[in-house]
Image (spheres, rainbow, N blue to C red):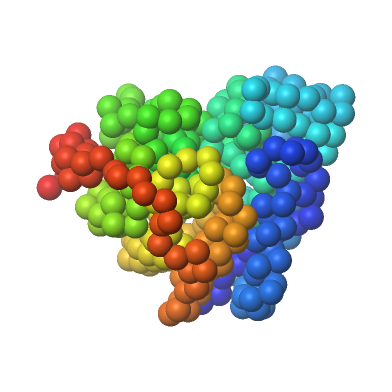
Length: 344
Ligand SMILES: [Zn+2]
């Protein structure tokens, strides 16, 4: 398997100070990939900057100008938890361009799959608003690009970050070409992502929300992937699968209350990879969203690459959950989502 990764030191220039979403996240990932020798098994891809035209397929032009101007002024807070430094705009256009580059490499057949290791993350950014550490919605911009350049009829976005990707959902809410599916802790930030949010107009049914109670771990996620994600993907038949890969549902992550292990992430990625091979010639592109425990994040990203490469053994240095949180009734939730989306 030929697997690529996008990375560039420009992503470290988005300086957020003591913020939980900081450059140390990517540094931890890269140093772990180097130390373990995994990086040598991967094809490096240099990102490019996304153009204003490409970004404006998702964000309005005034918003893009505002972000650029905030950067020019040196720094600033865009909302209560989203901050910019003087080079954040550059990092953000390269983050969007990085996911585009990964998508091109996969769709052009240069690679089997690719993972864009970028920041700032993107899935909370709406058409006109930065929020939740996100400036531009990288995955939505790449999806729009792929629809246009490769004339794809259908793209599936799978978002396993612990937070609901409200910005991505909004972008494609009435667009039947893009199916947005999210697993997330609920109720939780940003508040959206209930079962009843299923799309509108021509896009009715192409938004699939799986709002999980706190405490869900490997068993619950695998059940959901088996019972909902897999049949939804088979019914939709995408030409490309994009993944908002957030590792904040790991049990050691301080931002949320999920119980996934590194092994659980690997199993989810393996399922997604299998769906891509079955449904769309393996076309699979991942982009980094959250994940704030550096050890868990680095180990989980490495395990993701191991799965993409087809390496049989993964390392789970943190092991199973060391905290005790009981999940809600998963069988009942799965039944309600199946009913809502007419799954057998
Ligand atoms: Zn998150």
